[in-house]
Each structure stands twice: as C-alpha cells, then as structure tokens.
Length: 102
Image (cartoon, rainbow, N blue to C red; front, side, top):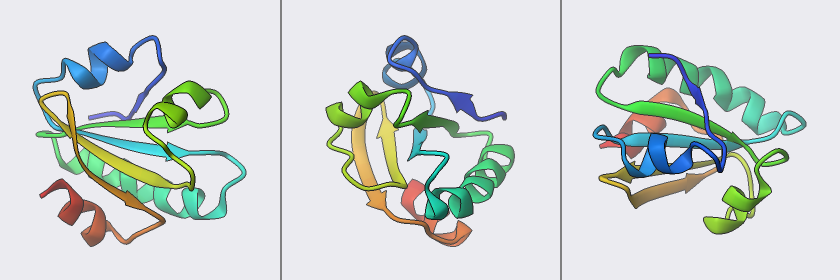
C-alpha cells in the first residue's frame, strides 16, 4: 500500500476513521534522521497491508505536529480505532518500526 500524505484536511478521514491501525511518520526534508527512516517506513507500507501508513511534513502541517506534541523528529505515532496507542521518537531500524506496530 502506498504511503499517504497526511494533512489537517484529511487527518480525520485517513487516521481517526480508519478501520486499520495507522502508522504516522512526522518528518521534515531538512532532517537527516528523517531521511534515514523514510525508506524504512516506505518498506513497511509496502509489506504490511494490514496497516495504513502516512507521513506528516511538520513544516507544512505545524498544527498537526503541535496537536500531538511533536517536539523532535522523526516521531512515529500509532493509532488504533482513532486513538493514539504508541509513539516513538528518533530513527529506528525496520525491526523497531515493526515492533512499534505490535
């Protein structure tokens, strides 16, 4: 499944009302660790069809970053049934991302 660009306009539909768990990657183009994590998140999106994967560019969506208290990037958030259930800050290997999904 392709990674979805999440904005404040589509957040409710794509995340809160998703029937699947959702992994969100909060990132920015100038962030080195974000660039390291990005291909890992892309791989997870392709391999895990049971999970919806989205990316939130914090420079373009500062309101979403503020809403979830994202102070450092990359930050990964996992939502299940519209509720935030897990989060992690910093780049991590694929195994770490998969572990976060449970």
